[in-house]
Image (tube, rainbow, N blue to C red; front, side):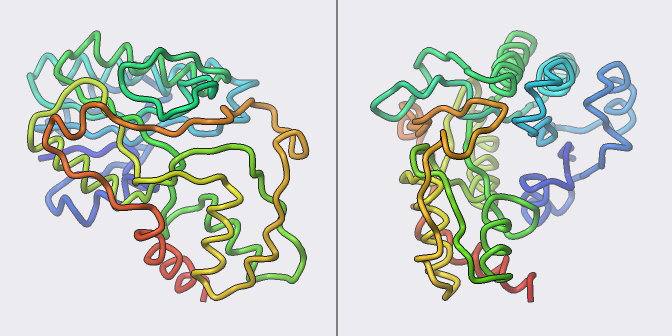
Length: 281
């Protein structure tokens, strides 16, 4: 049996249709904000593998509450890793492009040096290290800009705004990353899990975009006016947490491991847009 923590979130929901016999507890059953309770909680479920989709993902809030982000994204991940290592079972956990500082001029690969510039990134990097120290056979998947049709995310916000009115929608155009569709990511992770892949692995949909470019493409696919998306700079939309200007993820392991690359994000996006529009209707 595969235990998927954070089973009600974007990524956890994507795994539901792919793991019919899985267990997807909510926070009330497996609470990463209380690491001291995890051993008993996981003992009771007794899984054969763990996919940890639970995380503290409030990037801006983490600037004022880094300790909670550290507990959920690092301390608790270490506890799960130790449990899985004692049982000699696989563990998959997820990290982020925000472990990098954004100064690169080419896609970041797994062997590149990290340097997070916000509290969220620091907490996720600490979680990577604790997971691999406790369980060398663990798989830590770095991904980015997760979107789906099933939970609140950047695309649901943009398409919701576009459906409600006729005004401009201002979107940052000087941050570049890799839009990643939760369903595609979940399928790829299961392929890696089946092949026993361990260590760090970058998994995103192929290609890159700015938030502006992603929003504009989504409106085009929805049959809405893309001209309503107006580009702005990061300085025009100040946030508590700094974001890396360039956080495109590449991989120097994917081909060597014989894993299939994820589809181009533009090819995969129509299904997500259609799903969001259908849910809105």
